[in-house]
Length: 372
Image 1 (spheres, rainbow, N blue to C red):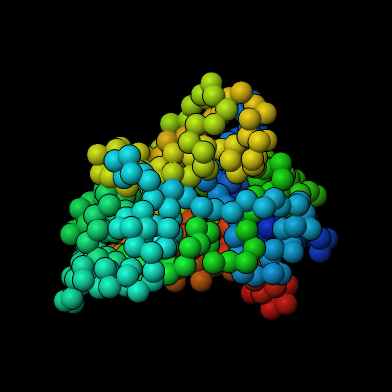
Image 2 (image 1 turned 90 degrees about the vertical axis):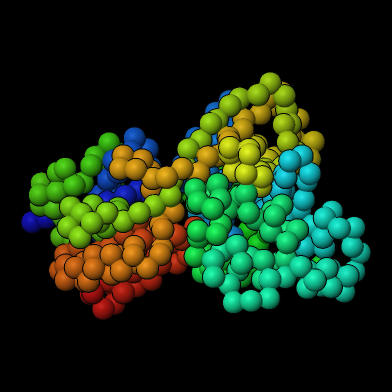
């Protein structure tokens, strides 16, 4: 007799959602993670009264009411609305690109003025690279100040050397609206993301600091099936080669003032500033005068870096070479009888939080009702 119905490799959002639904169905789940904590990249420990997004800013947003109701049934969400600011050499611009941005850029006051301005600056040919693609969408001024430097820092390459498909579209809003997302539902769990993960993992057994691939045989012997949410190329010992990623490094600092930048997210869009953005964590959960209740604040500077083995993989490099390599691993995974795959690293695809949960819920339904 196996001790567990499911061994879930990875205590991030995908694995935790799967564990929650399966535990509700009476299944016995063992959730393991190589890290010393649960939650994956949404882990947000409390530091001096502030929940710190240790692996970067995470804002939950969705148009799926079923998912929104699901997470709110576990923990209430606050009313946080993502309205980032761009800092270009000290000039401040609202994001996403909207009438406030255009007024700050050019002093334009009407949509017609903006459209004429952008049209006069657009690249008119067939885009051959990211730079020409961006210029064809938004023109010279917005590209030079708000896209070029930030994108080159993100990818570690000149925009002329990046493929056009990376920027398929750049939404331009001809209204005064600083809400970054179009989704009707948006917020942060009250008490931080650790509260959400704790509820999702309630009832499952948890083992931390446990590397599945170093103890595969003995761990497989404990459960009928395995859900693997780690890097798919590592699962197969890099049989076809390594998939590539971009990674992020963080410089987190406590500052002796209650309000450092006045906003949760400020992007630094010039090439000379080494970090891509600064996160001020308290602004995700405190608003108005409440910000001043604590005499200090905590910020994190984010640096985009080339991924190397041993670093945390963040963003898949979904170019043709890597996508073709992933398809080879995906075909191999499809032959596994007792192993399920899912999540950002196993699917080699960047997911926001709500789609991560949607895919986990879909997998639960598929397993329960088709046994596949």
